[in-house]
Image (tube, rainbow, N blue to C red; front, side):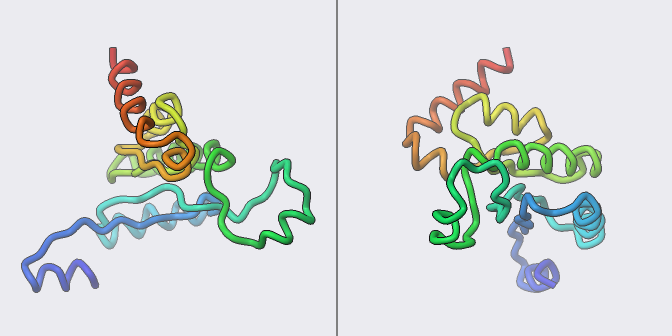
Length: 145
């Protein structure tokens, strides 16, 4: 629908689908199929998680905070799994923007090696500051040599 609307207006903007890390492989398969059918331009993998497994924070404190999405380092491994799965399942047929737990160059390179075309930082940027971007770029260049 959006693609048709943009075409009628002679405009072209990429449309990306941002997905949760909590999806099943069956749901990820559906996403790959939908992207192929609808011709969405790519995927942002992943959004925040509602999964609280392996957190060190006690349950009472978590209950008082609420059920909002969890981001940052606890998300890294699951995000990498989703990126890798989507990349393999789609044979790399669409761009994936890797998001989740990227705090340094190694994390960014891990996402790229898993199949991400680009990386996006949120929590890492908050905790590490603007120097994170420079360090990631240097680290990616270093990994290429």
